[in-house]
Image 1 (cartoon, helix red, strand yellow):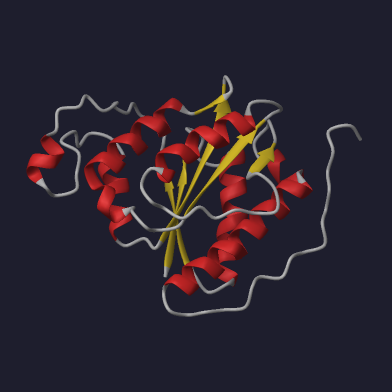
Image 2: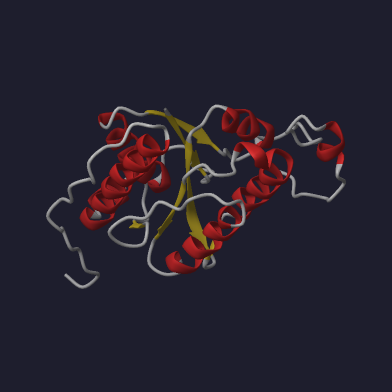
Length: 206
């Protein structure tokens, strides 16, 4: 069983990666395979509604010059997904949204009914709006949403700073255990309900 984690940040090892890495470590400790797909910093296209992907019926976008078809291919063998994004102007990275929209339109059958979660990473504000925006596309695909002990939000500005958000990192671990439990259950391996860690609150004002 495999979980595909998509790093929607142009920075390869920034705070979004830090959050996803915490998720991946916990998922692997629960016996699941993981892969982190990096969106990268090269230009991506938005969907132009040409419909060629439907005519070809191969689950791939007609534009093959960015990361979209790499995501489509990886989705074929994934059992669940996590999409992480930094917050830009109170919204997820626009490049991630463009790629996700094209991938779901071209290859939606390989996403449908598979569990998903999203993660928003920000310096201060806009995380809940970004989190809600990312969720909407996957909710339309009949994908069960995996939740945690809080909204899936991690705080940090400078690269690696997210690791110091104790509550955010705990939220990632709780999310990972919940996802492992759901994926195993859906694949005929019922397991006990995950045990929660003792809460590690972290407030803005110290």
